[in-house]
Length: 317
Image (cartoon, rainbow, N blue to C red):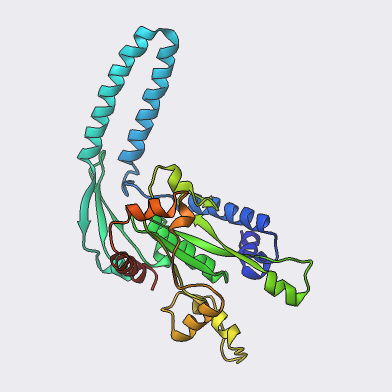
């Protein structure tokens, strides 16, 4: 609601303790994930999903196996064999439908900055569903469909509109998410000491997982992190504050705070506040040593940077 939204505005958010800030962010991401579910292959006509149906069947089979196990070991073994056959059949059915390939976006989809469109065929009604990969926040909000790319971009935009410093995190392997800069003020200090002792840290936010400040989440999945890069673009309001520009004609709206290609002046601002525009943050998301991470890095840094910059420019700038 409106009150919860106001709690996200940087002026009211920043005066709270870090624990309160994390709780607000968790509540927000819980809502975000319920409002914008991860899209797999849901049919736009009948609403069926091959993935959801397969997972439901697998769960039912596992439950049935547990019931049989409580009766006799013999029945349990027999049921296990049937389970394997059923699962194989489900995999075959899943392959017969769902994802068909990529197609070129139509004019309406191009207005939402879609670079490509995925095509799915329903495994039940056999109708086709288009899934344009929008890079426009307004289109993602309207259609409420996306994956980590769409939803991290949307979260990035929403938090910036609330006045927060945010950066986009690209796992060169297969994932993207967001970090927000939290400030922790020491109320016992006077104004001069407070500015000096002010603590700042980037906090991990994953909208698809509703995860807050859990950087080792992906490592717990078994991922071996190699290249994870953070991209930051300062808010226009930050630049204006730094220059002490009090011109009444410069009305800074949420639209003015949207992501822009950093200028030379913004580059200076980031340097003065110790916020790099581009930063390797791989070690934040792994418990592995530098030696272990470097052993996994078979591609040169320049190649990785060029690849990630292409993705950032297409989705953010």
